[in-house]
Each structure stands twice: as structure tokens, then as C-alpha cells.
Length: 111
Length: 114
Image (cartoon, rainbow over the protein chains, first blue to last red):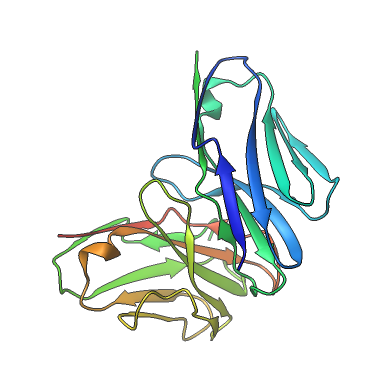
């Protein structure tokens, strides 16, 4: 059974204070690891897909990296508008096309 | 349409009532997913369609839950005899291709059972 654990559950940062969110996973045959952003009252918004260990992707202040056991979402010099819940999910080889999500990290960036 | 559309946005149901939640996927998207998200938790898979075929319903929590997509576009998630534990946000997602890894989510329907 695919499993995803995210840490920390909540993170408070000052504007400009860089940090990283962790996503640890176990999966049979990783087909893809996904990062989504979710604002209150809205559905998840796609950020990145990573397919293999060593892969990195960047978008504005966000950078996602992947190893064989975990993924990190690095946030550089965050702004208040980066405040949201960040969700990690995996798509495994034995689980059809479904995504298995972690519980998310609630990020709050204070000005 | 421009994105995945779900209706209603909010639904309050009395315990024991039947509800129907609608999902309009992005036009032309083959794959459609339903997820359930409890407060403060990540989404959990319910069921998956490829066009009109329901290929995976392993996540449906009980036989009170039923989903259909008869013409391969709009989908309806029906919950019979609602219980308090059914209170959650129900998310619909669609993707263009079979096995496509980028899924686009709707805003969800928040169901509250009282």
C-alpha cells in the first residue's frame, strides 16, 4: 500500500525566511510524485511532477527535489501570498491512476 | 470549460437524506477522479473513470456511495442515507489522457450532514 507522510504539519515563517517542507513516501514502482498548493475553500492547484530520483523543478520561489525515499519543497524568500497548504502525492505502479496524498503542510508567512 | 466545475459548492443534508454531487470536467478530458477530503487532511481517493467506464471504485467507503459518468463527460457522485461521517469536501479532478499524471481539480463540494 502506498503511503505518504508530510512534515511539519504546520510551519510559520517570517517573510524572506527560507525553509523546506518534507514529503516521505513508500510506493511500489513510483510513476510520479506531485506537489499541489491548496488555498482555503479551493481545490488543489498543480505545482510540479517529479518522476525519478535526482530530478529537480523550479517555479518562482519554489523548488522541488526528489530522492528514492523523499521529496523536498524548498521555499526561498517566501512572501505572504505563499501562505497555503502544500500537498504531496504519489502515483504508484500498482495503484492504477489514483493519487495517494499526504496530510499536507500548512504554511503561514507573516509580513 | 476553462476548468473543472463542481456543484453545488455547499450542501447541507439531514442525516438519512440522499445527495447528488455533480462534476463537469475539462472538455475532452478522458480521466475523471473523485476524492474525499476531511477537514485538515489530504484528499483520499474514492473512484476513477476512463471515459464512461468506472475502472476503479476501491476507495468508495460503503455501498451507500455510487458514482456514474454515463456519457463520458459529466459525472455524479451519489450518497444514499447520508451519515455524519460523510461530512467532508468532495473533490473532482480530470486529466486529458489515460495515465496522464497532471490532474486538474475542481473547487469541491462541501457536504455537511446534520
